Length: 370
Image (cartoon, rainbow, N blue to C red):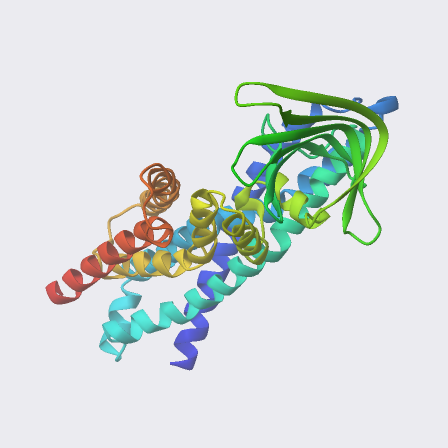
């Protein structure tokens, strides 16, 4: 078993590595072509070719994370199909490699891919994505932003609640387009603050806002209000919204680390904000590395097929199609679960459960047939 394990593991690892390298190279080329149009832009034409190359390199961990289930499936299908085509797997079966031993053999290897995918997706990819955004912010003069409306956060201070909107944040932590909407205990709008720029205090307990316009709404009677407006050059606004929380809110949920995403969900729940979308993304982050186990189980039935006259290219193509369909279903169930308010963990786990069940049924049927 030790010799067999070494033979299969080395073969699978080399094929998965080759497939990953091929796909990453393809995405690297596409990203580089897209970045070429930005060369020469920014303050004093600062964005050069080396910056474009560096930014594209920083996108590689995210591509590796997204591609791992597909490349694991392609690599393991290729190895299993080749063993079946050369009748090596038949010899292994007659030598004592039963169905459950073969399944356990691949599951052990799948756990290695799970650990690798988790490390890349939870540590390398978020850090590299943030550095890529900071690079663009520095040399292109664009700030980190998320969508057209920026980041929305909520802060509760005593009986008052405040909704905060930050349009963008620069690479050195400078805020742009800050708006603060203040609500009283009855949920009525009691004031607004709009600042052109802002920054975080040294101790992290307040925001230092600049060029601030304030509006205070004072009810006179049931149908009339008095509005008091003011302009100040600078204002210190105490709050519990840290720089890390703002930067997390400006990142796409799928680019966040699992712990950051969990902490952000707790902040949303604490302030009574909708967190369904982020909860689904959290569970997708939890289950996505486990999809590598689904992929290795999907590849095992190919070892029990009669593939002596089958072209290996067709097997690789089938692996690509199955892998792409899994990614599509994974994203589709995320959107459907968010629209229909499904249980977040169920929306995230359903595609993997469907594919795992289908692969185990196919595996069981082929074992009984042969």
